[in-house]
Each structure stands twice: as C-alpha cells, then as structure tokens.
Length: 256
Image (cartoon, rainbow, N blue to C red; front, side, top):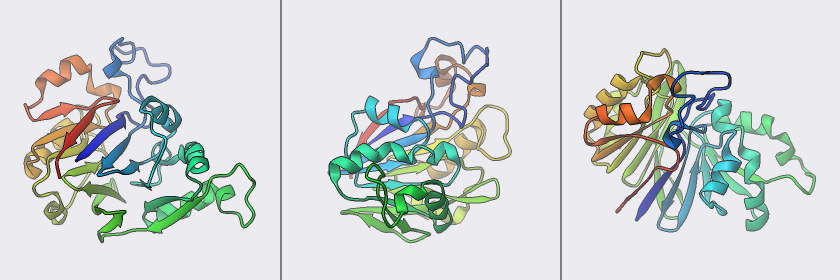
C-alpha cells in the first residue's frame, strides 16, 4: 500500500498572506489556510519526505512524523528547502545521517546553507545529512523505486517524482511530452495550480487541468495554491469529478 499526505499546499508566502485582507486570507475555513508546499509518502514501510520548507516543524508535529528514510528535494527555492534543520530531532532518534536526494546544483545550495551540518568536526547539536545526486535515472530508497520527472519552473530545471502509482509535481510551468511516459497508468497525480489567472512560472488552474487531461490519472489533486485561486468552498465545486483542490492534511491511499 501507498499513502501520500500533503503537509502543505500553499505558495512561497503561504495563505493567509501577511498583511492581506482578501476574502481568502480572512476565511475561517481551515481548508483556506495553507502552509508551504511539501508532502509525505509512505510505501510499504518506507517513509519519504518531499521538500522541506519553512513550515516543516509544524507539519511534522501535526502529522506525527518522527522517522524518515529519505528526503527528496524538488529544487532549491527557500519555500522548498529552508526547513531542513527541523529534521534534527529525527536524526537524533535515528542516530544515522538522513539521506537527501536532489540534483547536484541543489545539493550545493544545501551544503552552503547548512554548512554546519558538513563540518569535519560538527558541533554536537548539528544534524547529519548524506547527500545523493540524482538526474534522470530511477533510483531506490529501500525497496521503493523512484522515477524523477524533468520539469521546468520558468527556465529553471526542477524535479517531480513518481513513486509507485503516485506522481508528485510542483512549481511546474512546463513539462515536456517526453516525460509523459513516466506518468502512464498512475492512480494519483499531484500537480501545482497557482491561481485562475496565468502566471509566468507556475501552471494556472486551466493549465493544470489541461495537464491532468493529458496524463489521465485516476485522480488528481491540486497543490501550491495561492490566495488568488479563491475560496476552497467555491473552487472545489467547479472542478471535474476526478480532481480535488488540495488542502493541508489531504491524504490518499492506493495499492501498488
């Protein structure tokens, strides 16, 4: 069995946005409150975190996540990376470096931003990470096979991931047709949809729904949603039957 939980479904500013007084930011509906985008996948006992944004501590506590086998990083923007230090307690409990998989470019940023974790003689309270460069080829975490998906975020190459029958893509503005072969016959597609209006570096709602039509998953859920998308209660009712507007804590379970 596989289960994915969306730890956060918001943009780099989260929702509500500081200082904003729009209807969404003032909403009392918990589904309109969005932490920065991240996900947690459990697959036959293997526990994988996708991205580690600045809300990670709260997300791990909320979902009672206290062990990890790997962290996959889609790209180096701070809303996907800034919370890596929050896995320190897990490192202390597991007593072994936490494996991080990302493109070489992204690993260089991690080494720079969290340099204290890579000292020859780190201070006792530092975490320890084991860095693994990935590109196009499949790799394994324990017995779980992971296929990177090549995506563009404006002009920046980033990664999505297929894990079993679940595919996770965020921050995409373009996915080449050559990657569609990796998305064949999936139960769930997680795909970013920033807002109704077009955006220069993210899919908007129409582009995300067009991509869902192209991939034809059994179900799709939208993530990396901004306050400009509108109220959850209104937008959810406008979507096709097989598409859900994601929200923090959303989970989906599928067989492999």
